[in-house]
Image (cartoon, rainbow, N blue to C red):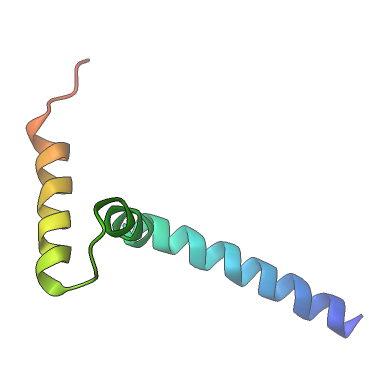
Amino acid sequence: MGARLKSRARSFARILLGLLRELADENAYQRHLAAHGRTHSGAEWRRFSEQRLVAKFVRPKCC
């Protein structure tokens, strides 16, 4: 029974970590790097973040 509990705890931890990465835009950033063939850097993170903020606040939502 102890191994089963450890397995469930690991599974829960993986799901929680994936959720946190999605909420923190880490997954989106990794997809951005892959799509544009770039590597991680401070400048690239700033570029990515700026594009996300502009897309979020410049395009107004209707209704």
